[in-house]
Amino acid sequence: MELTFTYGTSQRFRRRHGDLNLIGRAVGAEYPLERATYRLNGGPQHSFYVEPVPDPGLDWTVEYKNSPAVNRLKDQGDFNIEIPVTERELAPGGNALRVIVRDAGGTTAEALVELDWNPEPVSLPLELADLSGYAHIQEVGQVVNGAFDLDRGGNAIRSREPVYPDSLLLLGSAHGSQAATYRVVFTGFDGVKWLGPSDFFAGNEAADPPIGIKPGWSSAGMAALNPRGEARSFLAWGDHSGTEREWVVKTEPPARFVVRSGVPYRVRHWVLFREGVNTVSFRIWPEGEAEPDDWLCEETDAGVAPELPRHTAAAFGLFQHSGRAIEWSDIRVVSL
Picture 1 (cartoon, rainbow, N blue to C red):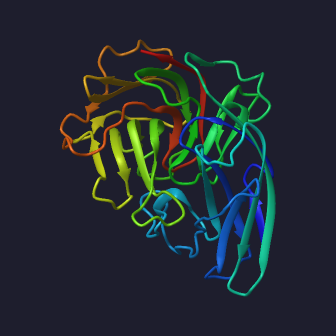
Picture 2 (cartoon, rainbow, N blue to C red; picture 1 turned 90 degrees about the vertical axis):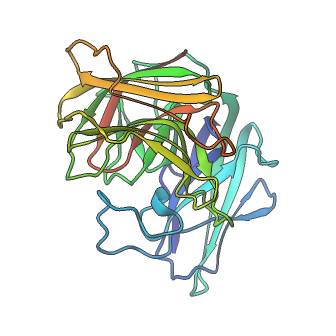
């Protein structure tokens, strides 16, 4: 058995949401696992979830996985270690994370990962039109799900194929009302259910009782498209967490917009927090054409029951549900 990490054993993080995400895989493990734990800087031992069973025949383009982790993980052996930014042992600068997995056959795999932690949030405005000064994707953002790469030659960010469901790269930190603009190219669809391409992410929520990974998705406003010509905005708290506080608001019926592969588009995506109401708006149009006056989708959480949780801040991120690689470039995020 071997522990591998998507971005290696020396990683860097800046405060973008409530957790540091360390994504990897236990290769060659026998299931069920006896234990999977991490220890930060010699502190207490914490358990984390490893996806135990593959789902043969599952079509990732249209289905949600029948797993406690839902779409947080894809294949057998996948894990996503979530280290809270409030962890007592987490220190600015260098940190040592020891990861141990023991499988059903009694084999133990161990890895030591160096984490460089900067607790300062990313300020607005955020200007990512020129990516030539960055050497690694972890200098640009934090990967929460899936994997992304920096294409310095193309001055773009690309989701890595095969694309994992609900891939998310956070570029900003949690702020109030804000607006993002960017250029996006979809390289292929393969009959996907939904594509993305961006989200104002408010965090992952734990199941009850906790399972070692937070399956719930909280969004202050997602922009979503599909190749069938449908567009939606989503707002959610703890979507797929299975808790009583979970809620979702979405554009119903979907708006109409036909997206094509290989065509560059421009997107304007807003989130507005005002008088206790969270509003998300977005529009998309082919590059070179005039920007539309009207929003394609606009939704609020005004109808959500008052006793349920609300969002007051969110971090801008690049999001993809499924499909072929997406390319993002010329990204700007400003405060409203």
